[in-house]
Image 1 (cartoon, rainbow, N blue to C red):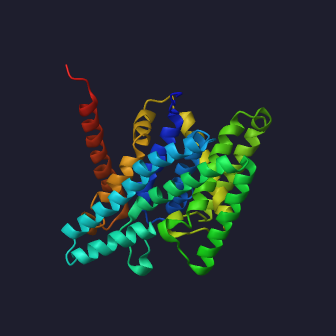
Image 2: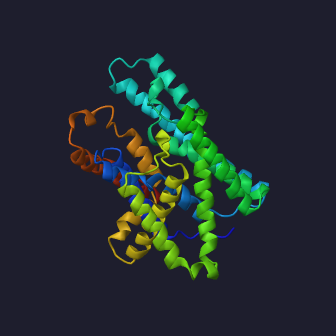
Image 3: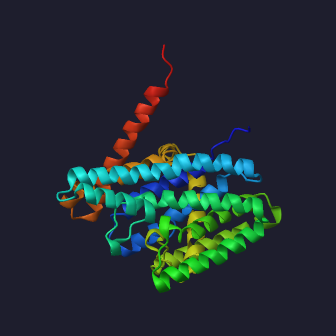
Length: 325
């Protein structure tokens, strides 16, 4: 099998986005919040589509599905269970019955739903959604021509957004977010093929400028998409905005790739899954976050804690993998 080559700028872009994820969970400035959420989680879905191999057989589909189930879905389940254990240990009045209920509800719904008291999923909604979106996108590549994949996912995304906005209907396993995430993956795959299309690339400067300008206008006006809480202002306007934001961060990442400071972002970008898990379990909301009341300080301290733990994880991995002499 052909060995995959990691794109440095993709890891840098993911590194930027995961840092902004940590900050975004603390930020109270509306404009900074709008900037971060205008692209930061869609970027991961889009770049997944950009870097994924085309799936053209059911044999390849099932191989990838099994791998994604093990590495993504089961990991999300484990993280929900571990957060429940943390609550059981550190939260006064949280008993075993509450633990079991939080696990069952968390895995069933796949995202936080404050209206029913479900807050045990945290950032793991992303992994549940990623698993199902990847499964659907890969299956559609076998069943339908590329253009029809986009049409199907576009329509499904529109229906999902309208239902959530008008009827506040969430689906189990956060499935109402899945078609939107799969649509983002499709746009990433289309972008990869467009790069090799000379007729499109001749017009890239005008296209890039228009998309980035549109993104800037949107977040300045506090228009942004927030998938986890089903916030889709102006429906597809916020999706186009996320595409423009991802493009801007991707171009920035390509531009800074030759500079040495980008190596740290690249390293972080290679470990975004680990960062999500660390962020999920860092006890901030359960314990020490209660003592910090200024969001810039909270952001800095949480970055320090999360990435210090990541450094330990990377060091341990290096120690385990290094050859013995």
